[in-house]
View (tube, rainbow, N blue to C red):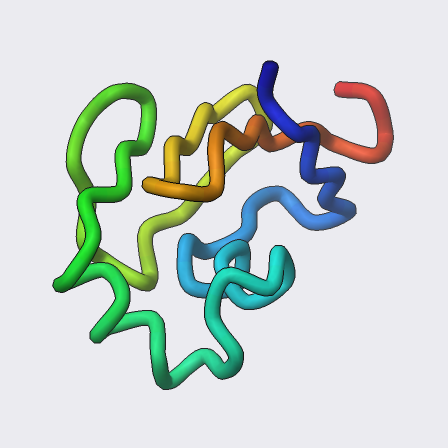
Length: 75
């Protein structure tokens, strides 16, 4: 079961999501973390910290589980 991440903006970046979920401590760690770990966005490997994540995107993080992006407005 994926953990829901509620956003109020049209998107969140992969680096921001990792930081907000406590997977990394600072935004600067995102580049290193994504180079060292296979993070899946919608079942495809992605190592771009600036990757835009929109509502209904599913992210799999090794050792952390799955996340799904949801809009707080319910859209």
